Image 1 (cartoon, rainbow, N blue to C red):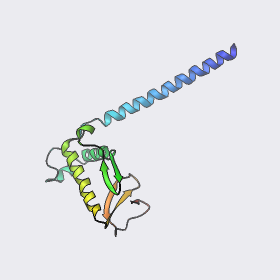
Image 2: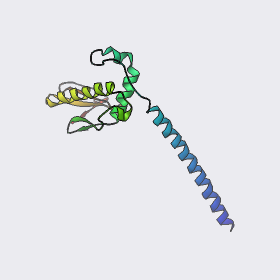
Image 3: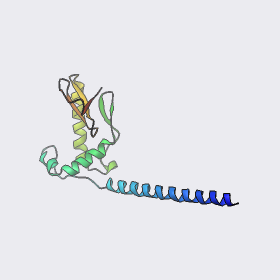
Image 4: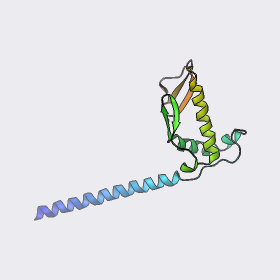
Length: 143
């Protein structure tokens, strides 16, 4: 009987500990979701006045990071699985600007003289001429 009580106490303690662990993780998930739910917008025409991006670099970086979660490289081209900024709480202004940039990068990749490099530290990609020499410790080629 005593052994049953001991096992029951251990089971209850494990159950409480796991509930505590999951509630802390859930709180972290909710906090992360709330941070990611802020509507991101930059007023003005970003194509005509690129200085707006520099004046709002933090907003632009957050929007780009949010959109990059939906970006992949398929057959040597950038591909994204979102069709509007609304779906990820980014203004259409920012969405259109970033998508236009990705489309431009894809058009460069049509020419076989360009390649994609990925910066190892933050996984950001860059399209460069194949003749470009980059530090292979920091960059990796994506074929």
